[in-house]
Image (tube, rainbow, N blue to C red):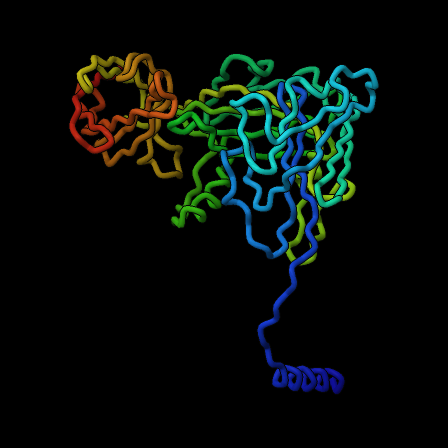
Length: 419
């Protein structure tokens, strides 16, 4: 006890004598950071080369175009970047050189982004690829990876299975389980991502998981754990009940991938901000990843048990913006325990800009429905038509919904009948 009392007294004396002031920490020594995941299932390979943050100003504002992946804050330019197939001395690609100024004008350009030529390096499952990067200031980074290969990928829903890629699978969000399995010739771990397309058909991930196995199961009641992070970024408040990964009435995209040891370690580990420890690094002379991955995508059509009077099939016909429209609607509300004012629907038929086959989202307030249907302009893929349909619904007979454009100007109406 006496020793404890002395310790307390010493700590108190130390605390009262401490004076905290500003300390200027010198800039750190930069390290080369590499992001290179080689995909033999893709015709083009790209490698991102940057350096660790040292306290110096960011160079992010020098970016010229959006690149595939996160924008480098401190890109490294003018580096010598190459990949060689160590098991194929007669490789017709030879030493594959990666360039910041690729010949193909359609490829994204950015400082620190290096593109390889089409179909190079030559890759066969089990081949060892060797990476070498030499920066203008003399840093050298090397790494090796074994090219992964798969004999097949399968998705299963309650006994129904398809080889990926294949036709869309039907999935009931109230009862079904999604199983993904890969059959590797070379490779270590499986990765599964589930995403919803947004109004521009860009995929928004709602589930992402990797396991040290070749199979994974995703149950019907899996929640969207990305939601909390996205809401924090948007400075919004999370609802009490997190939404489900599987939303009835929306087309889902499932990506199944097989990765090597390097990618698996890269994705499953991370470094502590203070100590830098914790990250499993397989590069020499730098940090990051040089690994191999193959993946395939497949559509999942998510439905649910019809347990709400507002759910079911509808037909909408009328005139919007002077154009005759006629579509079928397969509408669902959110799962029990979630916000059941939310609705989603498969829509198919003739719409404002031509044939349409996609999903729509809306909100119910009692029987009053506000549903937005997006359609990409076939003549301008960057332009999207958004039509809001609003009005009171009925569980039988027919009813009308008014149509509005983005400026909430009335542009027509449709007559809706239950199937």
